[in-house]
Image (tube, rainbow, N blue to C red; front, side, top):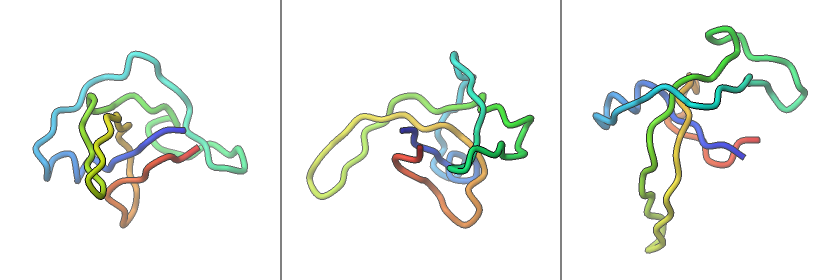
Length: 76
């Protein structure tokens, strides 16, 4: 499971992105590759703390276009 965030949101939140150490191909649930930068996910933000209903978790996000969404948690 991976977490994703849009580049627009990263810029809006003034977060720093970096090159991923371990690249991977992005595909949809049916297994088809998504046509974005050669289908290779190569940018991420470091660990961040997310607060949801008084709970805090540390997670990282891979950066890719998400249409109208700003972030997606737990995408396979």
